[in-house]
Length: 251
Length: 214
Image (cartoon, rainbow over all chains, first blue to last red; front, side):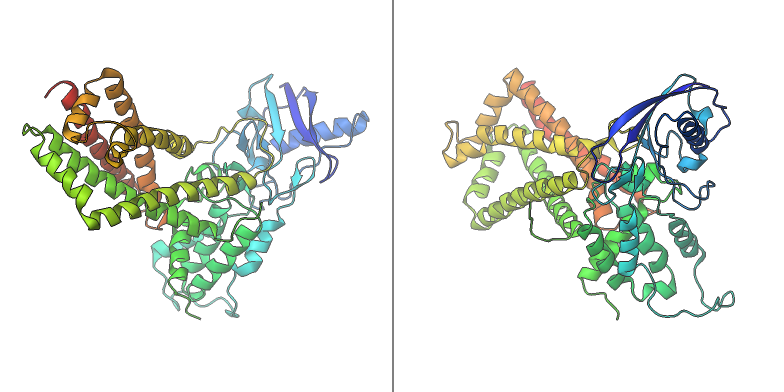
């Protein structure tokens, strides 16, 4: 297959940045998107054309949340429920123009080329996305009874890999789906419920401080989440926020 | 730009609360308007207008209503500014994610609503205040206005805009209050469509009824 790539190149965080055009041929349809970028980088290095294109990646099997590219107007490209590393070139047509951009948000500044600094998510977690007491080892099954539907909802929320596609997709660069998932997976379980009100206050305050936008219910985040996390988690976040305003801090 | 610190969710909750209040008022307004369709020479409708114009409780409510409308607009603009600041540099390729059209249109329908509302006030409310010349008998004023084709059509377009704004707003209110869940999500959205349709059909009935002399 043959493609024309338009890739955002930016020397460093302070540089202006621009799109660079690269023609690439002899790409297998079974090649993953990141493998295609590897091939491009090999050619750029071997032919001494330019510095290789920088992009984040790690596990390449959709579980680490490191990769994240804005491809032809969609975070993680033209497919649902996948990360960039799970995207394959067969999803494109031969001869396609592919525009590759980094996540765009004030809270995710570009470090170089397609790499952005997503430590803002770590800061939100550090603000309160944990249980502050030692919960000990894994308890025996049924020692703490958890209704099945709550366990399922908590598990679904916990599947968030923190890739930032929700922020990248949202027209307001809002992190509400991420924060909603992090608040939900703890608040739905007995161990995390005790600190739920305090946690939501701290995490939302940090989210606002870091410059993320607010949710205007377009649900692009839900549509682009590689782990298919639902908008109900945002609703739960709002509910816990209202609860915290009404003084439901149990500590 | 240094803006006062109110958490983003609190702002959203306030916007939703005011939106809910304004929606309930619209339902009340639409019900009251149906009195115009009675063939009683405006006895019921004018009596209602007199009550609304002279009762002190209603006058106090009027201040709350306009305050709510103003605050709804100011908070929405404030949110829009902070949201714009959250992404200083946009994408080159336009977004192709599957999103709710209603939400993306909400700001634009809001702006159109404001323009329509000012035009509506010029026809009725400002006449009552004496700021604009017109017939103080609102039953007759409505008949004069809605029999003019371009005014009647403009109002019908205005109601379509109201429908779009309310349809999205209804489900958004539940989402913002944290009441949108797996069990009732679909029901909330359907109820929103029904609510917006019923309110807008009541308004439409008056304009169409007067235009066709029903």
